[in-house]
Image 1 (spheres, rainbow, N blue to C red):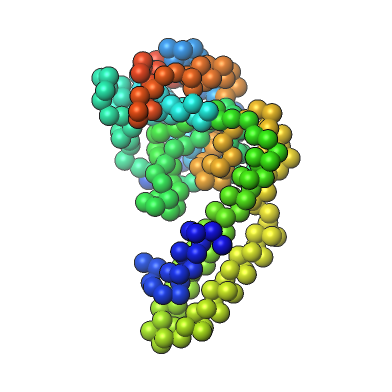
Image 2 (image 1 turned 90 degrees about the horizontal axis):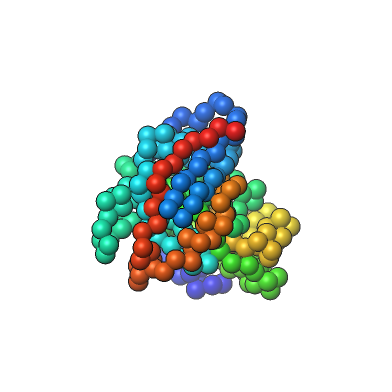
Length: 278
């Protein structure tokens, strides 16, 4: 077991484990959004099978919410991020990234159909420690750049993914049995607690072996080795669209010089955003 899983198991045996998007549209037409930036235009299409994220993005674009915001976080070989409304008037050196709206969006994981290949549009969010439900920010988004992987590199990613899924499933099963765990602890029944831990872990392994969710599909392998991406984000952040024009612009932005907090030294701005219905 990995260190994180061992910690969760120790907690089981010894301690108590301590918004609103728009209504999904009935229209099945494909929507596209043109982001006009000072580096060129980026056109993204929005997936219809992530309707809450699609409709929320369209709502904000139509309100002019993104007009003037910065790509405030840029990490080479990773992604470019925008959506903080406070960046419209941010001066050089100002802290950025804390502005948001007053709601979140429940996750819409359509995995493995949608994954973090280069060029996808995804919703940013707070980390699992404060956001275990993995709900998306109502306005922050990022576009993936990533890097290309070798077959060996993808195998290593699969092992990491297995460990993450193992811990996630185990933690959920522990939470579901918390009342019984507390009772056994009060009784001092350590043998039963040990047996329960072993049983839950075996159950987790059976589920993982049956679903193979930790394994990449042929499409993922093809894209991650030939196009690039960020596979460690798969099934963790909602992917709700992809770039169909201007991927070269994303590449240019991903290469800009940044400060110690990943803000571009020279502002990269969304001049305007407009919905285009195909």
